[in-house]
Each structure stands twice: as structure tokens, then as C-alpha cells.
Length: 147
Image 1 (cartoon, rainbow, N blue to C red):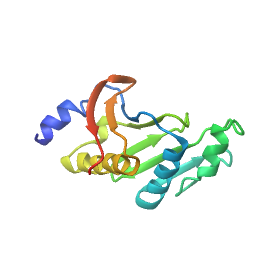
Image 2 (cartoon, helix red, strand yellow):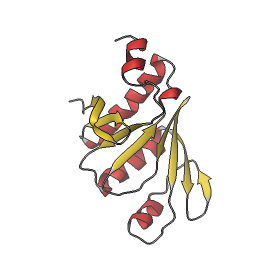
Image 3 (spheres, rainbow, N blue to C red):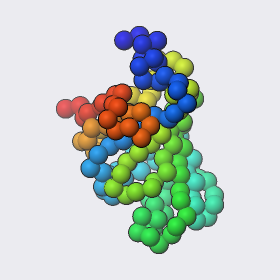
Image 4 (cartoon, helix red, strand yellow):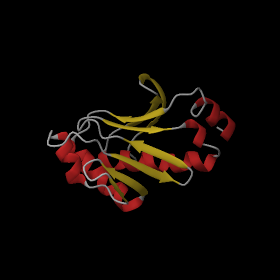
């Protein structure tokens, strides 16, 4: 499929976000993911407790939030050049990232996202889905582990 086809079928601009989701997620998967993105990607982690941003995710802070020891939310922005992936860490049993379709302007942007999705699938052995916002039945893209 050419870039125009990809843009029109996946990154069409309708004012909504796209969600990256993985089912059957666990705290162990979060730990693997945090280690991956800390090692491989440029990011900005906002620590809700200190109200400061750093270039690495502090997994212990996330665990404290999930265990109810803190009610201050944390966020991370992962930078794939012009594309920004957002994560809010709401639930230790659910993986969800958000992207904005308007940030995708080329096949290169799409391929960088595909690399990220493949990293998650290969790391966890789980299928990663790109869906329309809050619509798990509207799957736009599916990435499974490469054997």
C-alpha cells in the first residue's frame, strides 16, 4: 500500500486520537516495556509526585501509583521524531498509548511507529493493536511477534 492509502485508512484526520492497545497486560509486561523505552527511545517522563520531568521512566513511581500509595498521575511522551506517543499509566493491567493522526506526514513516520509496535510485540509475545479511539472493535492495524 502506498503512503496515501495508509494515511487514508489508518491516519485519517477526524479529530480523534488513535489508541495502541495490548490485551492481557501485566505488571511484568510494564517492567519490560519501561526497560525497552528507557533504553531505546527519546522520552520525557513526568513524575506526578515530584512534578518534574526526566528522560527516563521511574518504574518504582509507577508501581507506587498502581498500588494506591500515590494518587498523583504520571505521563510519558515518547518521541519518534515528529510523532509523539503518549502514555498515562492509568492501570497496571491495561496497556494503552495514544497517537495523533495529524502528526503522520510520511511513510517514514509510519515505519517508525511500526518499529515501535514490533518492539512491543516481540518483547512481550503479545499482539499489539492500533485502533480508533476507545473502539476496540475498530482495529486499524495488528502487529504480532516475529518468530
